[in-house]
Image 1 (cartoon, helix red, strand yellow):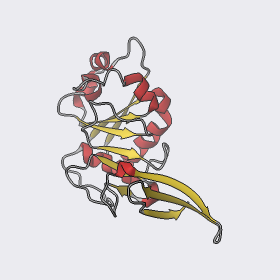
Image 2: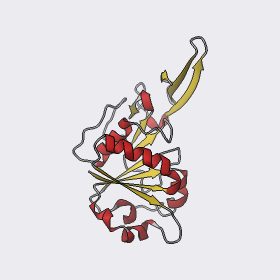
Image 3: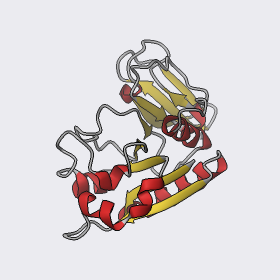
Length: 205
């Protein structure tokens, strides 16, 4: 699978980490596509300057505060600029690096949310990205109910991938990361907590 990884220049570090993870889980060719958005670098102009996009099988779009600032206005309307999507055959897979919401044109796409931290690119998250971008690669193990209606897959590192809350079934967008210290046993813990039902799970940091 040929994958184009599009991102803002400010997100170079997580892009490089994700590219390495994608290659580890079987993405045969990963092309890094750094954007330096300015007057001459818009989604529309990029499609003409980057003809190799026509051969992409999937386009992974890193979405962050930097991307929202640069691309938010261009992606506010329905319909996706060809400079981001390559051809109509390429599957677009947004990956949220932070809590910046996706624009309306991307809101109906299944995507991966990196809830464990911007630079923690796990192989499980990469495998889910490859699954979303392909019609043949099976999905990795996911906690909660991965139904056709689920749009957000949240990655909490060692705690796993979540489609929904395992207890109440709410979207994994309502799950939040948390860290604490258990003073009795002197253990540093990473938690995932549901904002709807207070369900939680934890692991050692």
